[in-house]
Length: 117
Image 1 (cartoon, rainbow, N blue to C red):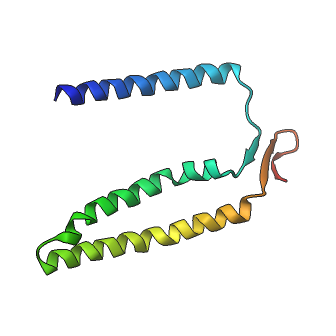
Image 2 (image 1 turned 135 degrees about the vertical axis):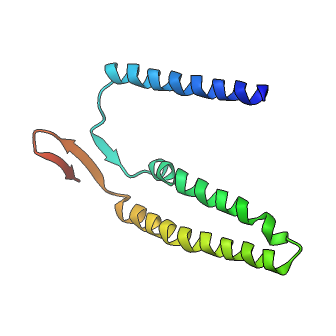
Image 3 (image 1 turned 30 degrees about the vertical axis):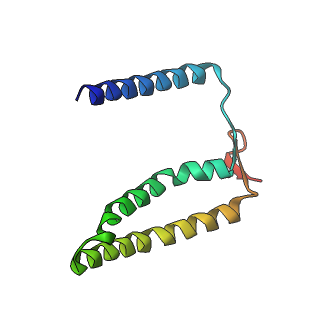
């Protein structure tokens, strides 16, 4: 209990510190006007979906070695459902990345908004 509370306090203080530092740096920094579809950006966009799939695999994993056939069948059904939902999204994401890898989005406020290069 004490360890959990200490970890939670440390996490909250780190989040607050990072938020404050981002706010302070935002005051003195220059706004970015060019967006590139880089592999790092795509990985950031994939973080939550990959975590959700990993959580689903963790839930289905122990059931795959269950002693009864019914439990194993339910675990395989859960695994199939996870993959049925995850694979199309991942394929669509990879297609988006390959189509837009050479695209650059530039914010031009005087020219009427965004334009693609």
